[in-house]
Structures are given as C-alpha cells and as structure tokens.
Figure 1 (spheres, rainbow, N blue to C red):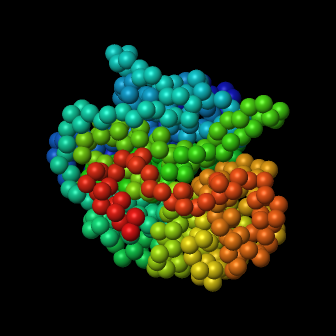
Figure 2 (cartoon, rainbow, N blue to C red):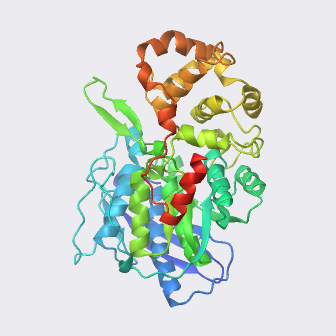
Figure 3 (cartoon, helix red, strand yellow):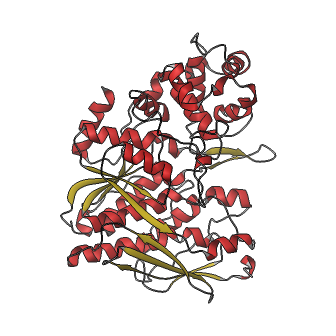
Length: 472
C-alpha cells in the first residue's frame, strides 16, 4: 500500500535517451521503493548528434527529468529530495524550487499544504545559491550571458506548441504570415488536437508521453493529487525535441493575462493571497525558464511566447479575423482528459473555459457565427449566471482555469451591454442592471486592454515584424 505520510524522500534516480529510437526514460522512486519510469518519445529517430549537440541533449534531458518529476513528487510531498544520477548547481536548484512551489500553488491551496521552505533541491556545495524569488516567483529581468553556453548553430525553425485552442492558432497564423518556418507540435494522443493541427496544413510533430502506471494506483490509494504545472513539463519536452531536431525556437502562445492568478480572501477577510492556476504559462516562468535554457542548454535556443504582449481580449480579436478554424478549435477542458477523451461536442457550454472564450470572442465576432461555434447562446441562459459572475470576480474569485483577468471580462460584458444584438440576453441584461452600476465606468473600456505590451522575450528581429503584424 502507498502511505504518503510514511515516505521520507523523493528520488530522481536517473534518466537516459536512446538516440536510435528517440525514447527518453525518466526514472524516479520514493525512498527505496520500486522505480517509477516515465517515457517520452520524440519522432524522427535515429538522431545523429555531434559532440556538442549530444552534450546539449543530455543537459536538456536532465532538465526534463527534473521538471517532469513534479507529477510524482506531489503524490507524497516528502521532506527530502535526492538526485542520484547527477549533480545540479544552485542556478538549477533555484529554478526548480520556483517551478515546484509556484507551479504547485493551486495543488497546495486545495490540499491545505504549505510548500514554501519545504521544497529544497540539493545543489552542489561548491556553488553559491541564488537568492530566492519573492512571492509569486517574479524577479527583476536577468541578462542572459550567451557566453555561458556555446551556440550550437541550430537551424532557423520553430516548434510551435498547439493545444487546440484559439491562442496557438493565432501564433501559427502570425508566424505563417511572417514567413517563419514552423512545425506544429503537441504531446500526447489527443485526437482533437491532431485534427486541429492537421487543419493548419503545416508539418506536425506528435511527441509521445507515457506516465509511470504506478502513479494512477498511488492516486487510488490516497496519494496527494491535484493540478500540476503542465506547461512547464511540455516546455521541457519541446526543448529536448528542439535539440534533437536541430531547431532554434520553441514557441508557446501564453498571453500576458496568464501572469495574474485568483485572489483568495482569508475566511475572516483579513488577508488576500494570489493562487495562479496557470503559473507556468505566466511571464515569471517564461522569463526564468527561457533564460535558463540559453545559459545551460544552448545559447541559440530561444524559448518564448509569441502572444506575451497581448491580453486575452487582444488574442480573441486576432482569432476572430478568420473563420478557418471555427469548426476545429476547442478550449473546453472537459474535452481533454488524461485517461481519454469524450469529444461528443467541442464545447460543453458550462465550464469556465467555455464561458470565457464565448465572452471574449463576442465583442469581435458576429453573433450568428459565435452561436454556431458553440451550438447555443451561453449569454442568454440564466443558469449560467454564477459561472460568468466568477469571471467578473463578482461575489467570487477568478476560476482556477486558464481564463483572462476579471477586468477583461467586465470590459467585454460592458461592451455587449451597449449592443442591440446582445443587451437583451439574460446574462448581459443582468450585468447591466445589477453589476455595472457598482463599477467605475472608466475601467470598463476595451481599447486600453488591446494595447500591445513590450514585456516579452521574442527574438528582436522577429518582434519588430510581429508588432507591425499585430497592429495592422
């Protein structure tokens, strides 16, 4: 039996990569128990690597091993972490502690745990530990010393992560318009994502990932369970794939709104804390992880989010400009399950993601088109009021989901309240009648939320062209 409370240590046993097959094995264990083996399979093998790329692949593999371990560590959250197969420096330890503490923030909140000070990765004693980050994981930007790790001479090409939703499709079409070569990439066996990826007409890369089967048995036996920083794991997988496939860019589609979490009030209302469901989609992770990759893996391997300068509403406006993917995209998490999919409909119509995507697209898309995508008008259903209230941060906190900021939802709803085709719908009419009078009218304008920000780590030559494309 798995007894989470009796476990003293979590061990990173070792990892290996077979270049002939493209299969990476990540091995973990609790105390002296059996090894938990996860596999990641990168298509395109056999990979012929020179000495420099082979060394970079080893560094990328170890980074993946360390970050992917979060899926297993959380099962017991033991007081000690051991790394058996290799040593890490203080820079690596600091990054991992950020990923585990902040990436498991929602998990800790829901399970009544405090991971601050508990997660300690053993750095080699010869290196000085970097100062810990403040709450939320945000640091001042650090200069990336390209000389720390040599350039590999990687070819100019992008692995673009696709999740099946609107955001990655906006990135893909922007890169296409700018003439950047790209391969649409995803991890796992989702048929919904595959269909969406194939719709792009671009080369695709489907990376396999198989969790250790024992983890599911541990969950049945009472292991701690909950949300993990999936984007951090997927980022590390794609960095490894980039080295193996000889490409110089790993591109995600996380907008600036992802940096803001849910504000949770204490039971007595005395304090408020921030818990970010999508921390590993935020700027703090992107900045730290991208800089680390260039310092420790390859100086010419660029990790960035193409949409970081945009709000969710700005992304929605970009998506609405084309109907190419109307019948193919889906952001509804109820359609994506670790143990399988039930793609009866692309949108369930009742989850926070459905609510937010519908609301975000409504100001920029003709009503008949939007209702056709979802199969019904979510804003004319009184039963949906509590779900939209949470998005508005009205009498509830922002949902633990990948949705935009409360101010974006309030601005979108206020805009709909001024439009004849929307203002009589039940949810919109109720907002105008009961909620809007309590709000500052000066904070309900959409235009300021559509401004393009400069906080990003997009390669400079691409950024100048992208800014012009987004502003067109």
